[in-house]
Amino acid sequence: MNRFEPRTPRTLFAALAIALTVATIGVAVVAPATHAPYDATTLAARRAPAIDVTITPATIEVIAVRDAPARPVADAAPAARPRG
Image (cartoon, rainbow, N blue to C red; front, side, top):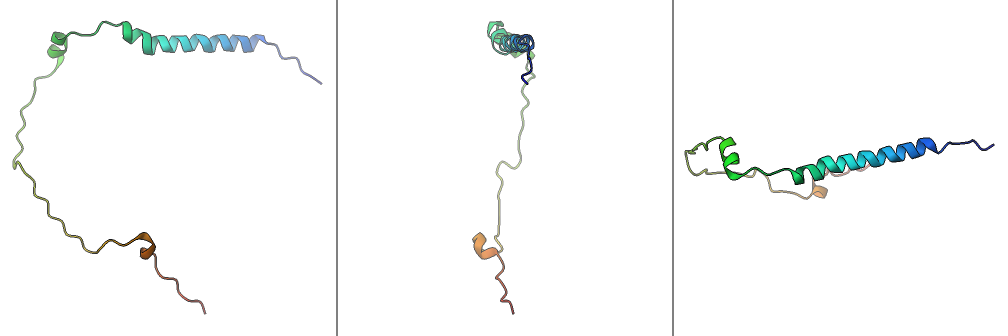
């Protein structure tokens, strides 16, 4: 037996989905594009003054020793023991 499914909820949900899509695009794309950007003086006034940092020593010497030569992964597996 076929059940009757009213189209009203589907139409309502479709309209709601379109409205939410338009609202999301408006908030994420249109609103930031129409907003007036800050000028350089406003941005400079908001920034904190630069901090002068001196690193001592100016160079870093790295010394490394490799214990064992690198082996391929296939060689790193233990050898199979014979059965018997």
